[in-house]
Length: 570
Image (cartoon, rainbow, N blue to C red; front, side):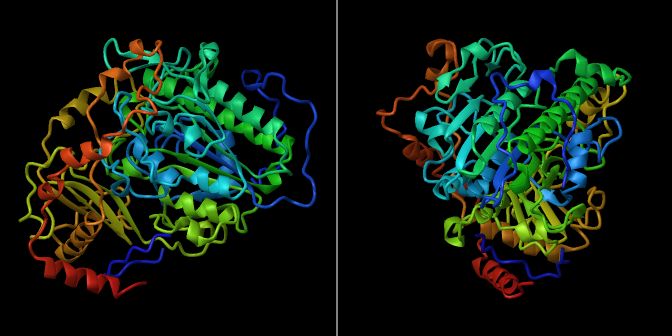
């Protein structure tokens, strides 16, 4: 488990659903589904079945219990009867969130701290990382993944079936057409991207992905005996990422919304809500529910230009403002000891790794070295979270802020570098954190495109921001000038973390990945026998990364700060 030292300044402590009686919607009906049910038997099997549902680009305001214009009755009911996570953090874009969920480690410790893994990059989740599904396999689980992978596929060793999943059905790239499963990485660089295990699933073209993925999950539930082996299903929806596509019948209830993008986006969220309803029904029908844990999470903030909304939080997907990193999340389970409540415990996406390994019966030795914490007692019993600090990221390759410098970082940290950290009540951002406006839900026609372009062309005038997030969750009052003492301590924490970082893995694109050279589909293009030269490539390409991040010559000053912070644990 994580053993990161805490900062020394003052830090504040921080369904049962019932039987669902709705009729199943025909688009989600499983073909050849067995008629018999396994039923809830005694004794209850241990450990619990785990269903992790991840949505893509769903904003903080894009769920019924946060919003008035999008209806999600099933998600609302599950959250209300479970535990809503209202101090829950994710990453601002797709690949980082998935990598941290699967490895329990910050991006700086996997080399994925910059951007996403592009389809043509010879890059994937590092092979030295033991993944969450691999740990669960060791603990006797049957592991299955359905949906979006986005953790690299240049070699077969990168595929989900080689990283701990017994079965896989879904797309490997970051974005595909919901019906045709075509994925493009530039003009003329398009290919088919739907896979069954390690084969291309050509025959499934034409079926809407949210329905198709739901069918697969229900089929897994129908054909597995819940009493024989615990089950882990990672359902990684493509929705509600662009392109904005959904069956027309889901758009009609939102016909009064004047903004076309918001209307389509809301329809896609409604399809997800229905899908979760049908999966939850299947959990009851086939005897899993009483010994199950359902976790719902989004992977990053919403994109207002594509119908999403993070209101009233600041910023959007791709930024380190709260709108980019504060996520939707809840846990629903009959095993929760304190249900029907809102949790303010600090939780990060890396925490699911040790938490789920612990639920599965694993001991702490199986999560040694990860950056996450086991937060089950905080979620289930309402105890204090063991987590009091989050490194949002340090990205040495992102465009440096023109107004940042080592001098403005008090000789401790080069504030031109994009980085963000939260400790207790405080959140620090350096460099360019991304476009940071407060954007209401895009309800009106043509909103927010017009004025958004004005803000996009505004150059940031600062490179250091400090907020008391507990008292100012909307990041409206910058306290960096009033509290230089806190700024210095958090800058020193960035230095501490940066010394543990590995070089960035962001190789150039490989022309051999072109789908036209691989039968028209996105598939692994580097042979198993081909020597992997990535390690030497990273070493050469990043040989000056520490030089670029030369942050301070005052090593003794940093040592004193960190020693003081480490000695004042809460």
